[in-house]
Image 1: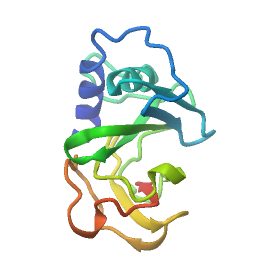
Image 2: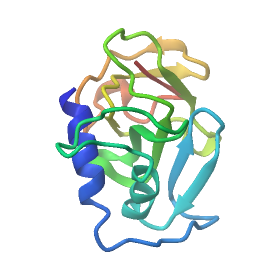
Image 3: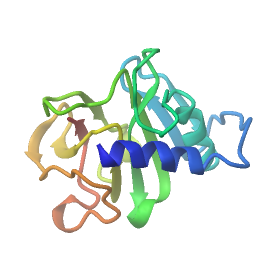
Length: 165
C-alpha cells in the first residue's frame, strides 16, 4: 500500500512545470497501456509521468480509491540506468495489483529495451518480477516489493519481460 500511495505522491510531484507537453515520436521516455499497448513518448521523464498520472484517480489523502477508466492506474516505471536514470517506460493498467499477488499485468519489453533495465518502480500496490525471456518465461528474479534504484547482479540489464502482481 505504501508504494501505491508514494507513487501517487511522486507522480503528482514531478508534473509541476511540464503541463501540456506534446508526445514525440522519438522521445526516450515512453508511456504504455499494458491492456491495449497504446504508446506515447516524450522528451522528459516528467512529461511521460504527467501523461500517465492524469489517469490516476485519488482521494484528498492521495490514496487509491477506485478505477474509473480502463487506463487510469500507473502500475510501474522501468529505467535503463541505475537510480532511475536514462530512458524510461511508465506503464499503466486497469486497476491496482492488490493483495492477492496473482499476476495482475505483464509486459514484454520492446526489442530496444531487452537486456536494458537497471532500475524499477512498482506503483499501485504492485510488486515487480523480472524474467529472462518474453511472456514471463525463463529465469525469474526475486520479487521487488519496494522501489528498486539499483538492480544488482544478474538482473541488471537482463530482463525481457516484467510481471506486476
